[in-house]
Image (cartoon, rainbow, N blue to C red; front, side):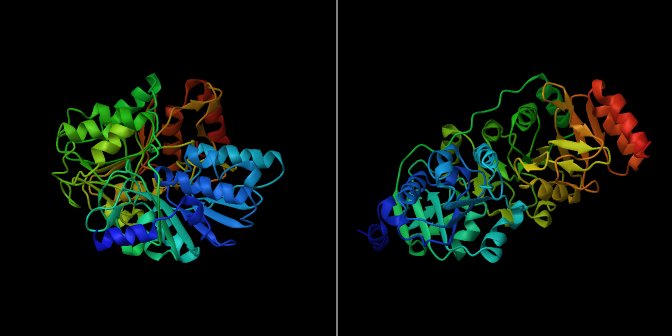
Length: 440
């Protein structure tokens, strides 16, 4: 047995024993989404249920279903205090249940993704960090796999680090490695990783995606958000050449383009020939494709999402979604009626980084309406209570009715172009509102 294996065995404990070492009245940082460790979350929930936890702050982004089945349950909210930096449907449901009881169980923390690592290590004391990792290699290294994001930063500065080793977590490269000497405790759990079902695109999604794809040149570097529209955009790029990847998210729709050589990174300025990501959400075949693949490299969000880094790749293309856009070009992608729905995430990071790139473009893509056409997503003024992208940052806005470049446009020109993107049923009321606001 090697010295590394001896160290591993000395640190190996049960999940119940591991959570006993997490101090009460402290800050627990959890790996994001796929990396949230289910066995440790279950053990924490059991300890809390038994009265072993009285006051614990939880910090994380995008809770997976396993979190809702374990620690994010209503009966534990008097002792566990969730502070998500990005809301998933698990967080939204829990927050809604709390509000129905007159309580704020979920305490949303606004954050730009590229600042998350710093926020979680400087503004918040990282008393303990728990995450899922790949099995240890012969040199004593685990890999953060799908989630270097803020994990690669927090894991270096947390007072205590507990890892959940899972053979299903892919071994990835870049800045993903974590040595056994830098880990306090190890638990083992080979549960299947969280998988995200691919959204089925509708006619509206396809129309929007096709317009975006026509704007993307050969040799471009891509950042694609999650959802049906980015997946269709990628599908529409199958005949392009020499595309690159520098994306917050690595998703299943990217795999066929890499396998076919369409995405090869040949023309990238930053890490050419490498496919750069900071988090991955997908399915088992995607994770298998990532495993031990040296072309796929993960780096922390403070690098991948930093606008000064993003801008170095020429023809950077960024595709993201929105909840609403007002007639001046302000974008809300995170709140509905003043209630947090998701989060800023990395959208503004890439909106700014892409436009700063030579030849770069950022696209805000959305259907023109929601609630079966009854509510326009082009609005006179933002109603959600949040501005994700300022009107100075907005570049292209795309709906099924067209595409508008807002750069260089006056307020009146912006209003005219955005009204033209709205559903015809809502254009007259938007025109009247624009006149009342003296935009037209």
